[in-house]
Length: 124
Image 1 (cartoon, rainbow, N blue to C red):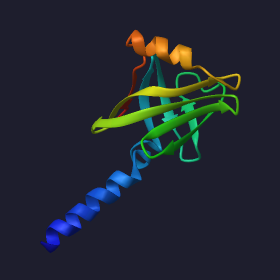
Image 2 (cartoon, rainbow, N blue to C red; image 1 turned 90 degrees about the horizontal axis):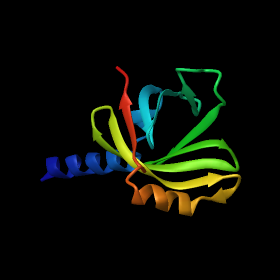
Image 3 (cartoon, rainbow, N blue to C red; image 1 turned 180 degrees about the vertical axis):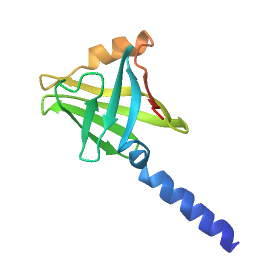
Image 4 (tube, one colour; image 1 turned 120 degrees about the horizontal axis):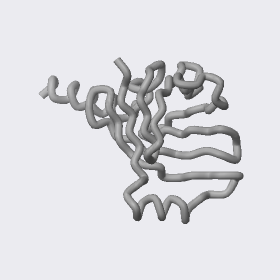
């Protein structure tokens, strides 16, 4: 009985940690609604494209199972991700803000056309 309790507590703790430890400090091939890019998620909160490091800096945050990519206060997106395997995540954009306005119609259109798909595959 005691072993089961310790195992259950460990599983709950890992679930509560979300995806942060699985992404921070690693490089992924990211497919964001059909657009592919190789991105390194640095430990200081920057999502840095490796294909063109001169691209505009994008900050990232991870809250539970949500990856938030923020270009600035008015332009950001929230991506809900699920770990599907070792170094592989899949999800969809849940919120999109452009020029400070939430783009609900754009997201609805993407959902209806099955284009609202985000995948991260770790580069080994």
